[in-house]
Length: 341
Image (cartoon, rainbow, N blue to C red; front, side, top):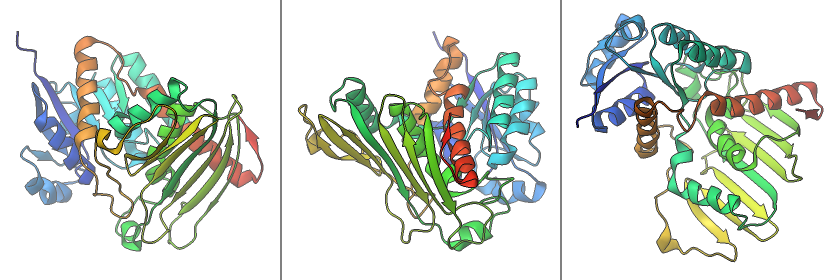
C-alpha cells in the first residue's frame, strides 16, 4: 500500500536550505511545497535556486494547513520564534544546529513541541556517517578499552568576508558566539555522543583576527565522570583550515576520525582501508564543501519517526546537549576558573 505523502516546507533560503531542498526532492512520498525567505527582496533573489515557490514571509509556510513538516534553516538566534509558531500550527520540526543559542531558548523550543505533541529533530548529520557509527560501535563494545582521552579538533578557517557579508554570523544575538557554537558544534556533538557529558571543565575563548563579537579560537579541557579526559579546540582563524578530527585513545587502542573518514585504527580488532564505507567531507575552509547524503539519511529518519510515531534519533534533548556544554565552556572562560556540572 502506498504511504501517505508527507508535505514539507523550509524556513530560510540560504545555502543550507538548498541542501535540505535537495534531500526532500530525493525522498520518496515526500513533497516539498515551498520555501520561505525573510523578505520579498530575498525571496525574489532566491527563487532561481529552487523548483518550488519561494515566499516572502515565514508564516506562508508555518500556517499552511497542508504542510506536515518544517525545516528551520534561518539564523540560529531566530530558530525559537519560528519553532514556536510551527508548534502552534502543529508542524513537526527539523531544526539546523544549534537548536538555539542558549539552553533557555532550547528548553522553550522543546517544551512547545512537547505540549503541541509534535516531533523535534536537531540536524547533526555527522552522527549518520557510517565511519562515525563504526567508531562509536567500537567504543561501546570496549574494543579500545577504557577511554582515557578524547580530542575534538576543529582547526578551521573563514575568510573575513564570511562574517562581514552577514548580519548575524559571529554576533552574540544571531550566532550565540562563533567558531565553537557554529562550526565546532558538530564535532563536539560526536565527542558527547561517545563520551557523555563531562562533570568538570576549564576553558579559554578568544577573538584573534576577525572583527566579530564571538570567538574565532576556543579551547577547553574536560573531565568525565568515568575518569577519562577530553580536549576541544575550535577555530575559524587557523589558515588555511584543516579537516576536523575526533581522536579516541583507550588503554587497549586508539582511532582517529578525520574529515569524516577513519584515518587511524589501532586495536586488536582491525579494519583495513579497503573496508572504508564512505569518503570524507569537511568544511575546513569552505562551508559549502559538504555533501548532502548524511543530511538525507537523517531527514529520512525524521520522516520514519513521523510515520511510526516514535522519537527521531536526534531529538530535542539530544540536540540540547552540545548547547549545554558550549554554554558551560563560555561560562568557564568568562569566569576564568574550572566549573562543575
